[in-house]
Structure formats: C-alpha cells, structure tokens
Length: 289
Image 1: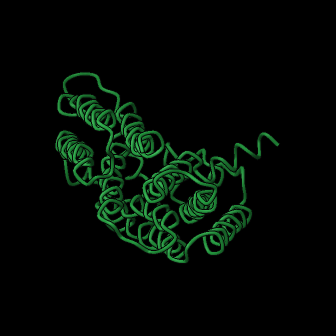
Image 2: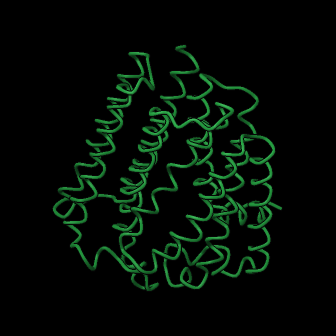
Image 3: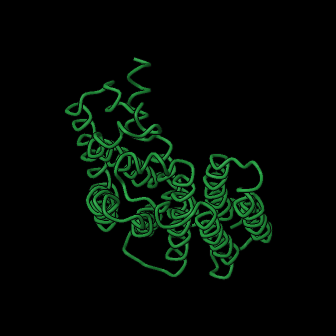
C-alpha cells in the first residue's frame, strides 16, 4: 500500500497540486474575507484537477521523460506504472475534480478549471516542444487557481482588481520558477529534444534574465498593499521582508559563474517565497479583519 501511495504522489506531482490548492485558498479567503466550509469544494476540486492534469502530463510526456535524468525515475519511464493505469487515474481525478467544482461552487469556477486543464495539457504541453519561451504563456496556469477560489468565495463571477493583481503575482512568479529549473537541468531538456533557452542565451545571460524576473516578482509583491489586498501594517512589513529576502537570496545568480551557487537551493527559495506571500495574504483576512 505504501508503495502505491508513493507512486500516486509522484504521478500527480503532489507538491505542485498542493500549491495550487494553497493559491485557491488565498483567492477564496480574499473574496470571503475569511474561511468557511464552502472553501472545501473549490480547494478539493482544484487539488483533484491539478492532480489529474499532472498525471495526464506525465502520460503525454512519458517518451521524453525517459531521456532526462530528472524525470527518468517517474512512474511511467521507470515502468512502475503502466500508461493505461496512469491514464485511468488521470481521468478519474479530472472527473472527480470537475464534478466538485460544477456542483459545489459557482459554474464560472468550473469553467475556469476546465480552461486550466486545456491550457496546461493542450496548449502548454504542445508548445514547449516547439518554443523555448513556452514557459511565459504556460505561466498563465498559475494565475487561474486564485481566480477559482475568488469566484467560489464570492458566489458569483466578479473580476475585481484585487484578485486580478494576486493572480498576476502568481503568473509572474511562475516564469523564474521554471527558468531556475531550466538552469539546473537544461542539458536534460536538450537530451529529450525540447527547445532550450541555453541554445539562445549563455548561462550567465540566462541567470541575469532570471534575476530580473525574480526582481519583478518582488516589486509586484511590495505593491500588493496599494490594491487594498492587505490592511495590517504587520502584513505590509512581512510582504516587504519576503520581497527583500528573495532578491537578496537571488543576487548570487549574478555572481554564480564566479562563486559556488546552488540553483536547486534558489529554486526552493522561489517556492518558499510564493508560499509565504500566499500565507501572509490569508493571515491578513483571518486575524486582522
């Protein structure tokens, strides 16, 4: 049983799916000005949709994954799971997640979820085989879960500047998140036949561009209070601190060619940064209302 659980966690990219639920919960908390039992449907629905979508992505890319060091141990290329079973799990999670969003939330949340799956598994998965810049349109995926949470919390479709700005933060964060992974595993992508930015830019150039993207996310983070998204001065300070923290930690991107530097550590820092921003926004509405 434990073995199967580990395989399923890997197939569904559990950490990515869990982060999607966190950003969904952020959107819900912002709309509802707190939490309620109604959040369960949107959060669980998004988690299942994200799990199914990630599993479907592994099914789609099972041939390419076997050529990459980073992915060859995944359930499909390592033969831990057959493609048929993986596809079955994927369809089951997608169906269950869709039903939860359709019957448990506003219909707009359901359609946003369907769009996210189509964009990730249809547009982005195909585009990254053709363009080294696929991560930029692909980053749109990160903007959708907060919108789903917002629509669910409001109980109707309402695109307010507040949620659009929060979604924009998660959109812009996705790009350096992906490019740090590319810097760390660029050779793998080339082996698998994917277009790589390393064929366009040198590692030093790509590091500088990635640092600019990270700096942009920090600026967006510090501007969150200007949109009335948070009100507590303590949260204002927290957002400024995490913005300066991520920029400070990322400065090594500019000197990494001269001094030892862990790109994997920078990747984890970006993940922790996004989690901290989401948590700070939620804390403002849970304890400072």
